[in-house]
Image (tube, rainbow, N blue to C red; front, side):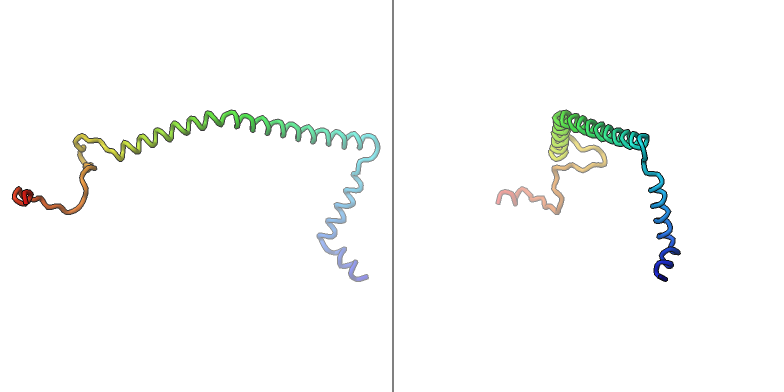
Length: 119
């Protein structure tokens, strides 16, 4: 069987064979192995229960905080809208140095004389 010989020289096949041999040697046997397996499963189960309880606690805490966060965001949006309305409306006093007065439209203008206005 040349095919079997080739598989035995393969590094992956050798590693799998060694892993399988190690697994069969370390199988729990007797009462001590069974107790070890039982305590491992109990510890894993307790960790799962603690994780679920913590997740449920944080879910409830998030739901409880939601109205407060919503109220705070609503106030912030009102403040931003008021600031934006103030920016658009502008300040009707004299413009400060370096800023343009926002009531003036940009473009080309002609000033009509008094005689043209009467016609």
